[in-house]
Image (spheres, rainbow, N blue to C red):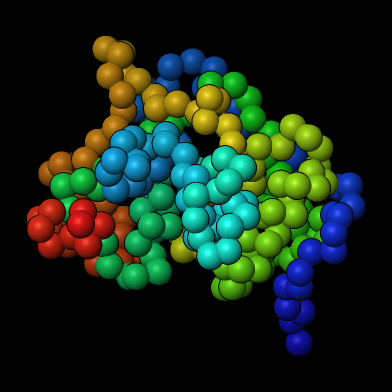
Length: 232
């Protein structure tokens, strides 16, 4: 029988593996590593906006229960290693991607090197007393969020850690849960100085998204704002 993920034993013992998110050494152009798919709104004006409301997602380290604006200002941003992984993380659970005009993708990068606790490598989760299921398993959100708070507060891999590097549950790609480091994350710019932030309904991008999601059995539909629950 496979052992189930239990609550963290606090405080977490020192240990764990570091993974670094490093700024590009040269201008990579419109490379799609790293990306964030998001729904633009007053709370999320661009793809580099951290979320202070929580906890709601896998590695949210917010403290309120039920979810609310974190009183200590804890904030999180999730990014993935390419468009397909980022979109799978957003739409994978529903199995359908309903793309309104406000769905967009930003290409993001670190302004400086950021240390992440690695949960993607062999044995990395067990090094902090957890199991690989913490990153990729169908574990209850309350459990993964409890671990996120323990990692954030106890710093088993050191005080420099700014989040978690992990393998995703849907796209099986790499992703980052970034904590409280908004000043160190930015949207990449093209040669003309424009932010690399695109609407998913753009014809060429939509075709690419449809192909990638079809491979993952996620249906892609375009809808108007009036039919989008997130727009209202």
